[in-house]
Image (cartoon, rainbow over all chains, first blue to last red; front, side):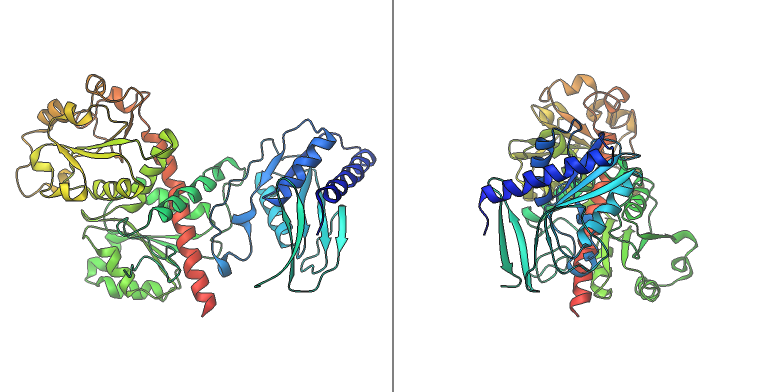
Length: 169
Length: 324
């Protein structure tokens, strides 16, 4: 659907918005955290564009999902790594696609198990319809409206591209 | 072959023994444990995977390390834990295993961790338990101790990486050791280059070569150029019938692991022991506390392995319950 240039342009515009957001909020000492795996790919690019001094954190929310009792444990999960103290830090949480909001709910729960952050800003490459929880992003690459049953997937890491698939195809 | 441990998708439903499991499943257990290993580094040392589940520790034999690491593992997965005190339980009043099992099932428990003096006890329970309950074998008689074997494999992979080139020696009371049996099976499935068993003739079971191991009765010959040494405790509580050894002192002279003996191994060899250690009987203090010893790593890894096995088995039965 999208070429690498379009995705890169979206991430550049996200970086600009984020820069402005951090300046107006007077937050220069932030910790960026990407959600595995697509969120980490977007976060790596944002982290480089913003030249953030603190290393990038990675979250694996597999152990915090609310569908464990339905689908069991997802195999081959990489561990989370939050290299710095979460306590009292401003966090930028990055994901590829915001859909139902359940992944972000799980990510927030995991972050709070590492400590109490000063704030959490949510940045997503794609915001789509179909929310099931009251979670909204602060920074958006683009908004898409797709039919129920369709799934937007970020493929990568190099190049990044977006695909729209039909579930249970 | 139908394996009672697996569901119809080949996923772990019970964990009773290593035999019959595929290499890919053992690697899945190790990888899942690796992703859980840093849970204790968080300020909240838990993940919510088994929130609302009840895990019962059903120990018919004394144990400190295994029971507490299972309890800690269940708690780190946010499960509620019930420790069944067998000394004061109905079993001493004549209740049989099946009746006890049915009573515990009626309390809506989700998983039983079973240690029993009789080989096959965990398998027996898995055959009779309701389909949405998982059984994990925490050691049955002289038969199997699969979570100990997996934490040993985790520790070996952590220190040595690839299994293929490794020569591993298991030393001591092979005859009475369920750890040795499970370790031999796991090492063979994971494809190490050679597994050796070392010990006096009285403590090596007849026909052990059929498991694919090489037998040594001389300690230095058995340890020559090995990469991993797994020491075993003399299980004197299982030596009540028969004369297996002249004395613990004499055993140490011939089979005790000392710094001097370790000179024949590969220079980077690691020393493991499932505990509890009998210093001066099977291992010298200098070795148990020395730089090659990874005995305390084994204890830490045991928690992550037990978390992984609990999460994998309960994940499989939960889905089954939902599908129904």
